[in-house]
Image (cartoon, rainbow, N blue to C red):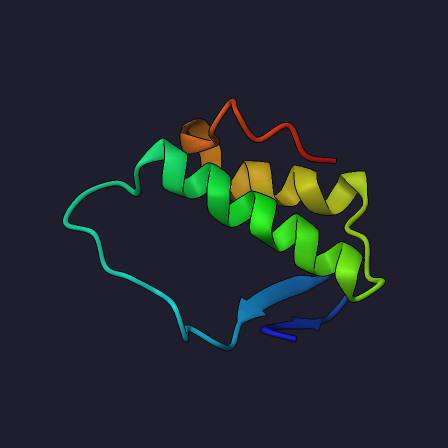
Length: 73
């Protein structure tokens, strides 16, 4: 509900920053992991499971900052 997916190949845009916080540096790994796990739970709850290709795109976007404690997809 908080993402807009458009185009082929798909591009994703965050459209709701309701609980967003600004950090003065990189987002702490624990926070990243919690956020990603919350996204996975929400996708399951909405019957919109994210497949391996989607998680691969998230991992690519996070780069080296992908938390190892978030084994998703």
